[in-house]
Image (cartoon, rainbow, N blue to C red; front, side):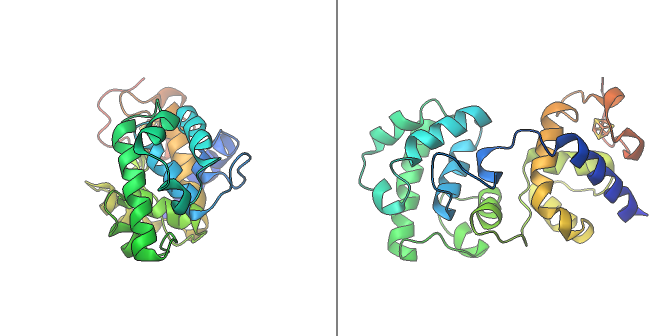
Length: 221
Ligand code: SF4
């Protein structure tokens, strides 16, 4: 029964959002810069707390010239800051990009590790970023990147009852058929930005309302 509901919701969301603009990291083809595990990692770091359009422009400015850890460590931190401005926390991110690039060279022979444990052991890489690098950088679809939308919406739908994105990742992996794992992040982020918004979701126009338990939704439109 639950599987049927999940299939229905995923099918409806696919129809609505499959052509919705995707953030750079999850797109199959990149136009201006090479797509590698390293460039996916850097673009993902830039995207934290930053709008998709700003992230994309900053990623292109930085990565069209400096798209390997070896080239990234040759430029001063201030140059990285200038290239990525106005992404959120650009000073912190410039330092993080330099530090992570150095660690990749010194500890991982210049290659972005292809294991979650190794990625998480690098200071400045969190669980969501590590999962994104695994899926979109290394094309390993055994991972499920969970951000705030991917955590909030399955709880509202009543699929799971979890407190943290980490718990959500574990629980969703048990119930979400694997065929949906690669598109799940794109669909739920798009849905969360437009209809199932954090505060006062648009339930009256929601295409999956009949499958939703609206758990913890106190106010809606
Ligand atoms: S009915 Fe409301 S709470 Fe449920 S998924 Fe739709 S927008 Fe979100």
